[in-house]
Length: 153
Image (cartoon, rainbow, N blue to C red; front, side):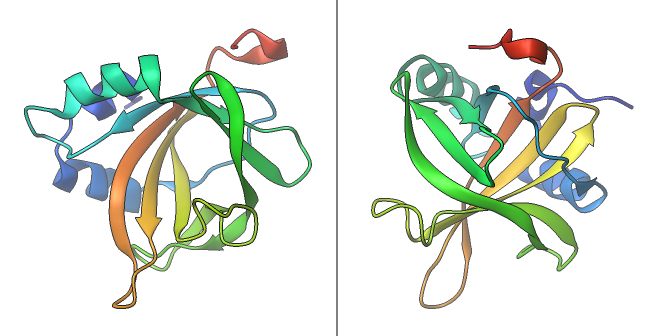
């Protein structure tokens, strides 16, 4: 079954977790990829927060092809992360990691991991590094399905 970011937005956290655990590491897209925040999955505020965030705060991620990813926030490129394969903090399996530890002063305590849940659709988890261990800060989706040749901006 194929999933869209809109379908992921309407899943609860248990459903997202199960889907994530059954998916494989994501190939790195080579273009701007629109994103959707999935805050407090399954709650009454999940969809409204996603709509507000995509219009105001976070619109997605740029992948310039240099081992880095750059978030599109407030409609500008900001907050970089190093990209690479790594071990999931959720289940120990292979994931694609976006790590801010050495690339950002603001987000140094955060790390994203993503897996491809359908061709061109990525499910991501943003972790916050805590003294007690990593904690899931939020979920997100990336949609690279229709972004060929720079058509997504």
